[in-house]
Every structure is written in C-alpha cells, then in structure tokens.
Length: 190
Length: 268
Image 1: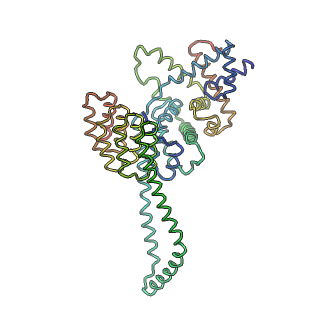
Image 2: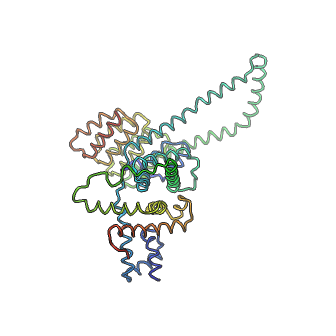
Image 3: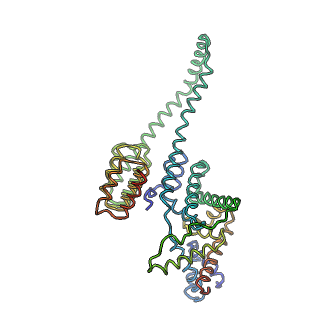
C-alpha cells in the first residue's frame, strides 16, 4: 500500500537528491522502507512503540547525516547499518538504566484469533518463539538475509564483521531456528 | 559430493544465494538422496514459516511524526536567511563615517570592481550559457515525459511519469498531462505513479485543487487510499469535504472509507 514509494527512481538516485538539499524526497524513501524497517525492529525487540521510535530515529539520522552517504554506496546497506547501530544503542541505554523489562506488548496477543485460524496462528506463534530463542546476532543476520537485494558482503558492512562470519551466522541461525521449532513441536530434526 | 557438503549448502539454497553451478549440484543430489531431501524439507518448512509471520503495519503516528520532522528540517533550512542579514549589518560597521573617507573607499572599490569585472566577464558569459543549457535540458525532459505519457504501452507511460519527477519546475502543460493521467489512465500502476509525482508538485495551488477534485473520480481503492494519504500529508484541510463525500458514497470500498475516516480525524 506504499504507493508513495512507487516512484521509479532508484533509492540511490533519490538519496543523492536528498543530499543535494531536496529533503522532501526523503518522503519517497520513507514510504518505501519504513514498514520493512519497522518489522525488522519489531521482530527483534517485540515492542511496537520502541520499533516506531527506532524507525523515526533512523530517518532522523539519514537526514542529519545525509552528507556522509557515499555516491557509490547502496542505500539499503547504509540504511540498515544505521538501523543496526540504533538497535545496539537502544539495548546499551536500556542495560545502563537496568531496565530489562519484558516487552509490554507481546507480538502474539494483539488480536483475538478466529476459531478457524487457530492452528495457523499457533504455528506462527511457534515460529516467532523459535526466532526469539536465537541469539541477537544470529537473529539479526537471519532477518537481513531475507532481503534478497542484500548480499553477504552488504550484511557484513551493516553489522561490521567479516563476510565469512556473516555467512556462518546465517547458516547457524537457519539450523538453530529449525532445531528450536521442531523442539517446540515435539518432532525430531534429521 | 558428500551429504555433509550438500547440507552445508542448504541455507544458501534457501536464501537464494547459491551460484548456478552449485545449485545444479545440490538439485541433482537432492533428487537422489532421501536423507538430504528430508533435511532440506525440514529447513524449508521453517524458512517458509517465516513468511507467515505478519508484516505488521506501524501506527499512523509514525508517518505523522516523520513528516513533522521533515517539515521542521525544511523550516530550519529556511531560517538561514536572517544569517545573511546579520552579515550585512556586520559589513555596515566597516563603512567609514566621514564623507571624504567614504569617497576614497568608493573610488578604490570602483577600481577593484573594474579590474575584477573585466576578468570575470568571460565566466559570466559562461554562466549565462549554463543557465540556458539548464533551461533547454528542462524543456527537453518536459517534452520527453509529455510524449511518453501519450504512449499506448503502460510501461512507457510509467517512464513518462517518472521522467516528469526530474523536471524541477514543470510547466502548466506537463502538470495538466500528469493530472489527466491521474484521472484517466486505464492502468492503476500508472495512476499510482502519477499520485507520487504530483505529490512533489503539491506546493502549487492548482495541483492541490485538482488532487482534491480527483478523489471523486477514482475508482480503484489503491489509488483512492494513496490520494487520501497524500492529501493528509500535505495537510490540505479543503479536502475534508471531498473525504466526507467519499464516506457517504455507497460504491466506495469499506477499507477506503475507514482510511478516509482516520485521515479526517487527523486533519481536524
């Protein structure tokens, strides 16, 4: 439904225009990416309000540090590396405050499920639970690997580690996720 | 190749990051080896399961906050003009008070002006040429997008809309062609792209009027929602009436009506 994002210019072209001072154009990038970013944060933090705040912070930083965007860069890589740093800062601040409270708005209790969807919802809940059981770095690598236009090299730029490490993390995450899921369902993995 | 090696490639197979050569190898192995196939099916079931996790919509507050921030940023850029004024008053402090010194300074400045002026005349000429060139490029872009907008193939018309967004100050005929596209183009995608393009030119009152009028002409829920979002984003209060009429219209999709109601409450 992000119709505003259906401008045919590439993200890169739009970001260069923003850099030249056409800040209005950032709206196009917001419309294209805010939902992905929101879900990227939501799946990691499990908190809606926090995720919205983080999305807002990412776009604020894009605007504030627009001059640091490199002309040869790839916009999504840059955007996610800002997102990665925002998330780390967020957890750091929270730890410093000693505020380790559980997510107040758990992802699974948002709506009452209609009877016929119960089974599907239960499966979704198990997958979310298996995802929650992954370590932070594996979960993040896994979520990033789901964006088809991000190569392992891009993800390594985003999270700031070697390509080999990223690849190993994604592989491990997929395997762990599968193991956790089948443990939760009581089945065995092969 | 051993089963262990094949299993090591399964994650890349799932994420679509396996090169064609290995893809062939893994495919051939999986069709022969039941154990690896079963391992792949388990991984795949969970991987596909991730697709089922809801991609949630953030609350409308996120969009409002973002555009408020963008607006504030623009306003801040505009505040830079008084800085120029401050520089002027600083310069005024240097101007001598006594008429004789004023005269001497004026003569000196005049001489410096003549010397520098003769040097820069050539570059001024070049600047003039550059401005002319820019105008010509703009005119050419306008012409190209106008002609693309008239093409029978929708992908060409989409390119036309995209081209129009690169024209910095489009003339009235290009804007009117874009508005015609918004109201009459048979393709929903082209109409949606036209909404986006017109968003960039929504600082013109004629465009705003036409956007409000277009609301009652649209039949596709996607275009309607996109237009509603646009009118809300540009905080166009005059669209309230059109939005209310949309809610009254029995033919309009309930989701669109609901969306319009949300935006009405944001606008009032």
